[in-house]
Length: 217
Image (cartoon, rainbow, N blue to C red; front, side, top):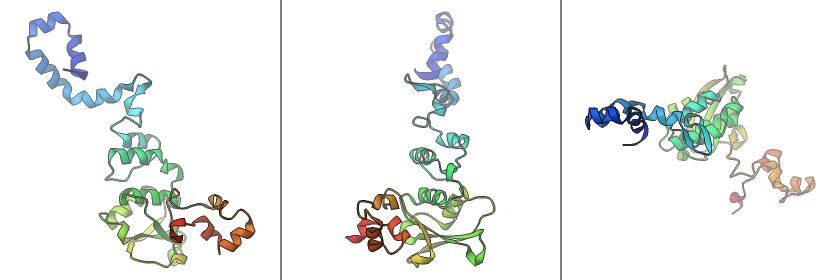
């Protein structure tokens, strides 16, 4: 016997345990079993982490609860590790921005896939459409993508449509790309150290910002 049940049994004292006999262990385990997880969450995960496990993102079994504390509403269907990663990303700090919406959608897609946005649909600044490459959306439904985006969209923004597309006109879509895969503007300095070099290498600012070296191979 270990854990919460063992501590309860130990607290009864040797006289009580001797009088009750073997049945007291079974009784203690049965009565404390529903509280095992609560007990684990209320106690520190390790000696060098002297706070309750429920507040420890690295060890808690309820990362979504921590997300609620910091204002991060998690999309459904995530594993515990995926929930931890989502809370660490602090999407709530960017709530309403396209990268926050994209990060929520990527959690549903299960990878660092590109997510596109058609903004100002019908000349309405508060209406957008979401585009995802069909090949990236295997196993994810349009309803799941919409629900994930809704966790990060600002109040008043209308998601008019969610489209799974095979190909789109890159010039009409704002694509959010994973920063770990695509070099940002500041990271092209080695390729184009001067503005003259940059102008010669890239036709537009967006080209330099979103340059992907794998496309050159």
